[in-house]
Length: 152
Image (cartoon, rainbow, N blue to C red; front, side):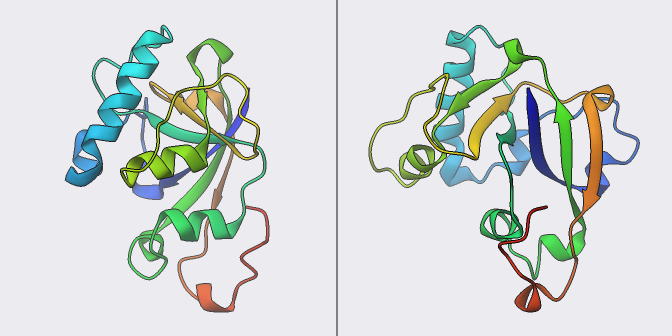
């Protein structure tokens, strides 16, 4: 499955395997992330108790990065779009809009093998370097002047 993720460049340097870590999850979101870990376990994908590596199937835009991370503080430290091919059996899909509602404490959320919208949210237990097809650094400045609808 062809996927894309946004990752800090610092985490990619010399990385043998990329895994999620609770230190990167804000305390207010941990309940929802634990629900994702449990859903992945029910789907037969073991994360060893770690939060997932988030990715998306479908085209991503600069706007997606800007919505996920603060351009002035986080993205200015250096991020990249990582395009990779992951084994289907490790990919757990869900609806990103419903996930955001769930994070906000509204509505319900479940995994769904075929989300209706693209880009589809996909969670993985890890990302191996040999899956990587391309790493494209994101801009570190000038976000207010960029075409945020441009693909990354």
